[in-house]
Image (cartoon, rainbow, N blue to C red):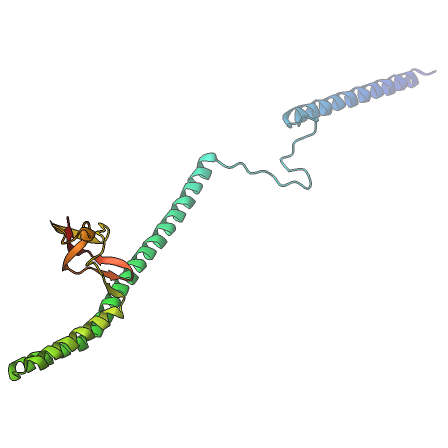
Length: 213
């Protein structure tokens, strides 16, 4: 075999060996780079790569600062408190106004009812100056009194019947004690100094009485 032919064969062998060596070195570099990249990627407990995306079907959880959550809750409670306080103040003012209007209306109604009696008294005063008939004047005063009392009765006024009744500290006010004219009047009212009155079954003035001892 000629020398040139042997030289060419040796050259081909060297070329193949160098090419194979270069291919191995390239593969090693690629493997090293892949290993370095894989070391920098975080993995979960199952060894899977964490990509930052939530698993399919699940929403990513957003972490909330507890301080911000507390501030938001306090602001909401404060707003509710202010609204409730404003509603209560409006209710209180409205109730007070309605109460005053009710009292004022009741007073006006009572005055309107008594005004005709006042007119009768004014006419009686004129008669006192011009008339000398005492009996007629007395009769006129009695009529005015009865009219006034009936007007008050229509509003729920009722007089107490205290004379001869047993003394009751709930409705009577004893101003003196005198010897009873009879044994059956001991501890009972023997005289009435000032009459007591009920208004709709409630005592509005105690009777001032003298009690038999």
